[in-house]
Each structure stands twice: as structure tokens, then as C-alpha cells.
Length: 569
Image (tube, rainbow, N blue to C red; front, side, top):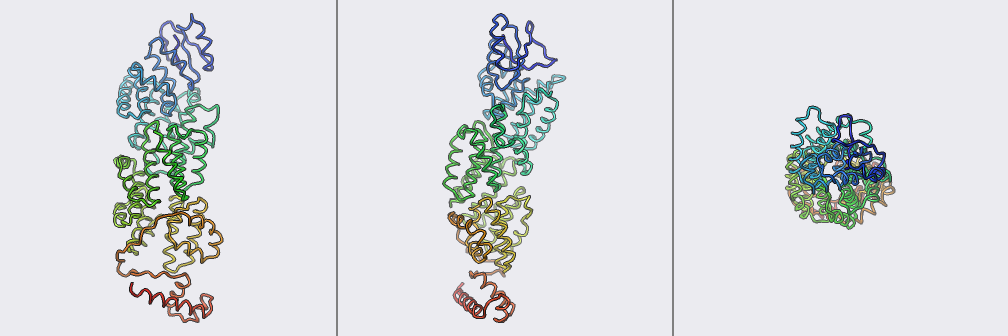
């Protein structure tokens, strides 16, 4: 009989068996060819990436308990959680002897199928058994901590999950250098779960840094000599990172990560990394106004069943679908999506507050797109804690649409402006709204600066949908500014092809003291009107604006014509 196990000095062998160290799986054939020795050999397995042959030999004799213990000691549980060693998962699920003798294996196998209750029950049994051992093996404690991390992700319990990631890192340090070298996926799996917990708590910067560290350099996970589990978990991290970048408006970074991953991994395997990359590509198409391509990517992502249940992936799918519905003029469809079970499950977990807040933001956007302004305002009360900038900016837009300009201006002044704290797409929306207000106030120098900064970011990331949804005033303003027109006319021309449905202006009454009827004026007409209000003469206006007297008189006639034409307002 041949057993596969990594042995420590404290391990004892079954009676009559001897140990035979192997350098590689190919060395298995030599001892197995000696028929008279196969009943007394224990293989110290040195290459866990190819354990199927050793496992098959180990169970032939029916000593499942000893074989299961060998698998746990060889750190197979983290590999299972990384999505590798499907043969071990199948063996555990089809051979009751394995699950009865080693509950940690059962818990890990159950998690790969999304069976949380079974995994929790098995983990509780394993914890009870470990509590009775004076000095539990590090491999057992580490496996238990990582199983708890996986359960916490599925349950949406970020607080417990982050505590377990800390414990897992401390336990990993206690492994020997040889053990860590044999399990290169260990720190990556921990980072994968840690990033998910950080994202759920709204710590976007830390989550992105953790995912970048785990994903590694471009194509690193695709090296031929890389361990399968390592490649898989790196790809999962890269996929999640690509969606987070796309969602934040970092479209160039998202495209690089997603393109690299989808080149190496099959897009229809159901791997969470590949599905995240598909959604990232879909979101990129959305922001660039390529709605048909976005729909195709979403359909592709949804057509493949996920190989394991992941609430973060489900949330990303729902947000991407809702965003597409809003941009294509179907806000009611977005609202139906946002009332589905996925969103309700996220709302049930306070530790998943970031996703819950994002669902509220998109819900408010859908109400605003449906011209249900008061519903949009009500959705943002109370204010989402982990999406403050987005919520206040959206509230300012909604209040202005409702004719409550003073309240909208106040909400706009409370939007955080730190470029490190808000995403590029939010920065563009904020600056454009600030510029629109500046134009209304006649502060054209400030508007010019804000528009330039917004268009610079938007052109760099090709945020065409964001620019198209700003309205026609932006294109008119840029056309009157030679510098802006020279720099951004080509980009604005590409954004003009994006068909964003504009809701009709609200008919609600404005706040007392606000302008009840807005007359559209050109920039020069507004400048002339402002100086008229300051009791300037025609000659003074001409000198101040560097215009001829005839031009000023032309603007005056136009202004009086506009006023007469809108007297019924």
C-alpha cells in the first residue's frame, strides 16, 4: 500500500510501514514497480500540484482516515478553496469515509459547492476535535481559519472574516520555509478573501492594493511553471480588481487587467475571475457608450454558471445590469433588478454596507431617470455612509431637477472634493455640475477651469456616457471657448454619438426667490445682462467686454426679444 503525506518529525507511521522521500511525482513509478514493496511504502509527497496518483494509491487499501489526515497535513484545504484539486473535492464528496474521518476536508469540499450549512457543521465538528488536542498541528489550525474566512465571505460577515485573515497570516508564519514554498497559493488565497472583506467595508484603497499584490505582474499567473492553484487565485484577484477599476472609472487599468486575464483563462469556465473580467469589460463598454457590446458581455457573463457561489460577484452582476438599463432608457427595469433577492441579501448584512450603499445610489439614479425626483431624494435619506460623495452629488442633481436650487447648491458644496477620496467618474460628474452652476452665476472663468479639468479626465478614460449625460449646455459652452474646443472637440464629437435618454425637466414649482422661468442665453448675452444689472452704460459694457458698440446693441435687442417672448412663463 502506498500513502501520500507530508510528514513531520512528530508523525508516526502505521506499523510495518517505512518512509520514502520523493523529489517529484514521476519518482512514484519506481517504488510502485516493486510489487513486494508497495505494501510498506509511505510517500512524502513533494509536489502537491499533481496529487491524484498518490491519492488513488492511498485509498486502495481502505485506510481513509490516514489518507485524509495526509491530505490536510499537505495543506490541500487552501488549494481546494483556491478552486484547484477538483479530484480531491470529488473524492471527499463521493467517499463518506473521508468526510467522517476528516471534517476539515468535508467543510472545504462543501464550500466549493456553496453548501454553507454543511461547511459550518463540519467546521464546528473539526473545532471541537481540535480543542481536545493539546498542541494542534499548524496545518489544521490554518485550514480551519481559512474555511472560516470562506464562510464569512459567503455570509457577508466582513468583521469575522478580517479577524480570521489576521489569524491565518500569523499561522502561516509558523509554517516551515519548506512548507510555505510548497504552498505558494497560501498568501494569495488570504489576500483574495481579505480584499473582499475590505471592499465590503468600503475600504476601496486597501482592497485595490491587496488585489494588486495578489494578482502580481501582468501575465505572472500564466507562466507555464506556475502552480495551478496559484494561477487560479491570481486570476480571481485580477478579475475582481478589473471590475473595481471599471466601476471607479479607471477604464484603462480595467481593460489591461481584464484583457490579460481573458487571454489566459477561458471565459466560459465559470471561474469568478473570468466572470468579473467579463463584467469589467461590460462596464467599460457602458462608460464608453458602446451599449450593444456591453449587453453582449453581460449576456456572456450570465450565461455561464459560476463554479462557486460568491455574493460579491452576484452584487457586481446586478449593479452592471442596472447601470445598463438606466443608460438605455429603461429605469423601470433597473428598479426591478435592484429589488431582487441579491440586493435584499446584501441589505441584510451590515458588514456588506458598501454594496448596500451602491445599490441605493443606483436606485436613486433609476428614480431620477424615470423623472420620479422625490423618490430619488427619499432614497438618499438617510445618507449612505460609504458613498457620501456620490450620494450628495446625486442629491444636488435631484434637488435642482425639482426646482429647489438653493438646497441643491447647498448639497453641492458638501460634496467631498479630494481626488484621492472619490473616483475619476465621480470627479467628472462633480466638476461638470459645478461648472454648470458657475455658468448660471456668470462665473465663466471658474466654469472654464472646471470644464477643462473634467474633460481632461473624461477624455483620458473615454467616459463618453458621463459626458453625454451632462446635457447640451456643455457642448454649447465648449463651442464658445476656443481653447476648450481645440482640445476636446474630437472627444465631444465621439460622445455626441452616445444616445443617453434625457428625462423631461421637472414641472414642480421652484423655491421662493429662485428663478421661476429660465430663459436660455448665450454666454455673451449673460455677460451683457450681468453688467446691465450693475447699471453699466452701453459704452461701458463695450469697453469691459472688448466689443463694438453695435455688437452690444445687438445683444441688447436679443435680450429684450427673449424677455418679451417669455413673458407668459
